Image 1: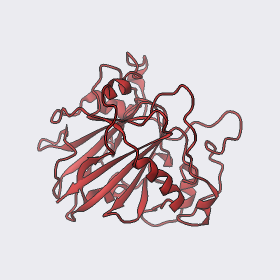
Image 2: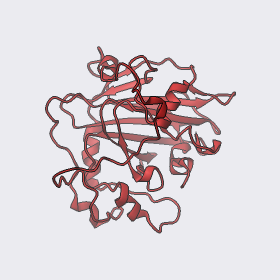
Image 3: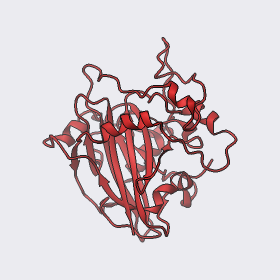
Image 4: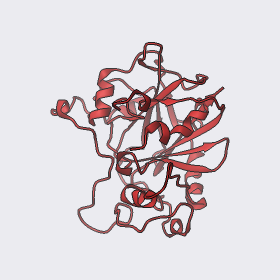
Length: 302
């Protein structure tokens, strides 16, 4: 399996500030996000296993948004035009899409500690992102360097069986602290300064026209090294529309404390966080009418 450091190496030529659209309705963003956390830990929390990132198979029907039985999509090729971007109307009686994000860095003692995303990073600094959603959904990560071409860096054909499915309030580390090798547990800033932007795209259903799981594995089979996939102009235009939408944002801060054992174990075993467990540093909520949440993490590296 290709290492997370290599997969996300593009992140490491840069600097860091969380760049989100202007906040809105900030009154109780944190409360609205945390209200769907379970009151207590699940009974089998001690026996939890690393979660599958593959989305559940449909039991009936032939919904084109949830089936994986598609023809392989070629990067930037004609295959990408056969699927339209998913931008469906928000289902009735569902909560707003929410994304929690906590940035960790490695301190001098080797511990993962919370850090302000506005921190200026230097060569050799290490970071890791802990993500949490308030609903089951699909998370895509796109990257652009110095406003250059956009490429998808997650899902990845060599990670998590190319899946990107997230369950509500089950935290997810990028990269994973559970890796058996220290070099695979962090994103490491290299010697090349620049401006990197990571776009975290959360949707209720898989995006049409974007290869995931078996489709992405087939697409990347036989490639040497990285297997970048670039979204079509039509798809990226749909995502950019949501980038411009304001997000209700709560930056709770609480920088400095180390990552708790509970947070680490929940991420590695697929255990849902409960109401009294540590909260994300930053929480973002989309509007009640939006079918997609797009948050931007801008990394500052000098």
